[in-house]
Image (tube, rainbow, N blue to C red):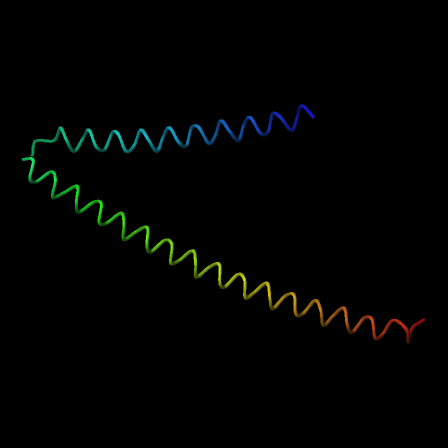
Length: 98
C-alpha cells in the first residue's frame, strides 16, 4: 500500500515540475520581450505574431491528434472484427472436435 502512495507522490511531483517549467518559460520569455531594446510598437507586433504562430501550431497539433485518434479507432474496429471472426470459427469447430 505504501508503494502505491509513493508512486502517486512521484507523479504529482513531476507534474508540479512540468507546470513550474512551463510557467517559468512563459514568464521568462515575456520579461525578455518586454526588456529587449525595441520600441513598444515593435514589441507588440512581435508578440502578436508569436501569438498567431502559437495559435496555428495548436490548431495543427489538434488536427494531427484528431487524425491519429480516427486512425487508431479504425484499427481497433478492424482488430475487433478479426477477433469476432476468430471466436466464431473456434465456436463452430469446438463441437466437431468434442
